[in-house]
Every structure is written in C-alpha cells, then in structure tokens.
Image 1: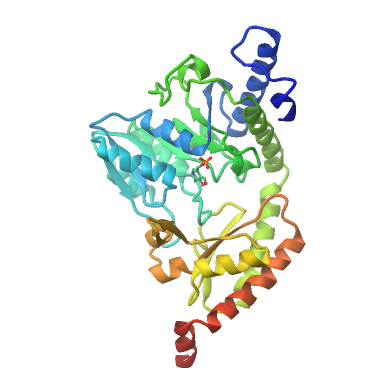
Image 2: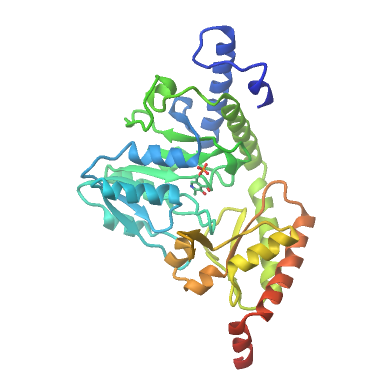
Length: 367
Ligand code: PLP
C-alpha cells in the first residue's frame, strides 16, 4: 500500500501516466478480489467497507412496496438497514434460528410472498462463527426468482466463498476481516443485476458507486484477497480450526458450568463463543483486558444500558447466559504461546469473578 500514498499517488480516472498506473493497480486488485470469490472482475464494486457493501446490496435492490426476508441473527449492517426499509414501506420477515444458530432454508421458503424481492441471509455469523446454509437458500432464491444477497464478511478468507455455488446476486466482504485495511470492502454484484446506487456523482465503478477510488485501500484489499486465497488453498482453515479447538477444549475442561454457543453447527475456523454461567461478561472482558487478553462479550452497550446479544437471544439463550458469553477469535498470526496464555488466564479469571458471584455460591451450595 505504501507507494500508493506517496510516489504513485494518481487518480485512477486521470488520463496521464500517474492516473494510468493507479488504474492498473485498482484493476489488479479487482482481479484478486474476484478470484477469491470465483466472480468476474467486472462484478466487483469497491466500497468503504462491509457496512456500505451491505447497504448497497440491500437498498440498491429494493423499492417501497417490496418484501424482504432476512434472519434474526444478522449483523447490525444488515439488521438496521432492514429496520430502515420497514420505515420506507418495505415488508420485512425475520426468519428464526435453531439452538445452534442455524437458519432453516425451509423457513426461508415459507416466508416467500408474491412481493418478495430480496433474501438477505449472512454466510457466517460474527458472534458464533456459525455458517449458514447459503447454497440451499440460493437455490430457493433462483427457483422463486428472488434476489439473494449474503453478508460474507465473516466467511471470506476463512472458508471458501464461491458466488457460482451460492448462486447469489450480491455478496459483501470487508477488508479488515481478511487482514486487509480498515475502511475497505467490496460488493459482488452479479453481471446484469441493475442496482440503484447509494452515492451519486461520477461514473466510477461502472456507475454503481461514485467517487474517486481509495487507491491505497483498494491495493491493500487486493493483496489481502490474494494472500487469503493462497492460505485457503494450502490448508489454512484446518490449521486455524486446530488452534481454535485446542483453546476451546482446554477452557471447557478447566471451567465448570460453561459451553460453546453454536457447538455442532458448521463454523468458521477462527471464532468461538463460550458462555460462563454466574459471570458478567463485561466484567470478564475488562479483567482479561487488564491481563493483556482482548476478547469481546455477548452483550453490547446500547442507549447507555448493557443489552444481551440479539444473536445469542435468538438462539434461545437466557439473558444471563448471553451476557456471560465471550467471543474469542484467533488470527493467522496467533501463536501457540498466546493460546496457552488464554488457556491459563481465562479459567483463573472466571474463578476469581465467580468467588464474588452470589448466584455461583448458591449454585455450589445446592449441588
Ligand atoms: N457484517 C458482518 C457480519 C460483520 O462482522 C461486520 C463487521 O464486523 C460488518 C458486516 C461490517 O463491516 P465493516 O466493519 O467493514 O463496515
């Protein structure tokens, strides 16, 4: 990325040689992103991230009076877009998930109405890592002649993502989830799919997203896609899953009253969501952060109050269990020593917090 901030700082729309070098770099990156998704380069629209790709893929395909089907476990980039659609006179159905966090394609089929224009169901969930049956859903969308968008932000670069197999019309990815730069992303848009842009201006990105391209960002996204593709082809996911499973199994063995959210469902290899009964997730996150371990909890601060995760609630977890859940992720650079540290420090910290927990003491007395 570095030369494109300084000595190769051209505008990809300019005719002069700086512009032509910039254009070549953008198109090289487009080829790499297309190759990661088994798409054609012309089907890739660069965006400012996964959120914008989701917004473009959804708002761009839907009009007032249409009906949209999504799920109860979507990321806020899709969920809040659908809430906005409802305010704009679009009907939205939210299909549920089972206890393992999986959407049933049969429920998607049942939700289809004559007005249904779009199905938007994520490929992998950002909290549990559970992979959704997108190929079955894609088949349903084709049979019923409905657009299918999938948020593949958490799937791309972790498991193979093939737009031909999924049979989707639109698919979102984000740079920073594949070790690329923040503030970059892309929407795959199937050839021939007419979209209403979100951003009007020049003719950039084949009139699908106006504005001078983020040259260094796009170059970084392209490189990340290229590296991700090699990693996928050379056994990266299995190796990563081994690291994640070692951490998961060791924590489960060392701590009682705990379990994995989404266990038994297909999952991306980097994520685990673990509940720890009788512990407040936020307290655990802070205590672990002080020890040097960065994790997130199954709750988020919303309007000043700590709300349990809508994903975990949709899977049937109680408020307490959702709030006592942690999301742990490993990355390509995570070392065995770092995993050993997590395995040591999490049980110790849970035990210390439980000593202060009146509900844990009660449960111990009665067992
Ligand atoms: N969709 C999912 C599933 C995500 O996990 C995220 C980010 O965490 C997004 C969309 C938003 O992507 P971005 O942060 O690039 O806007």
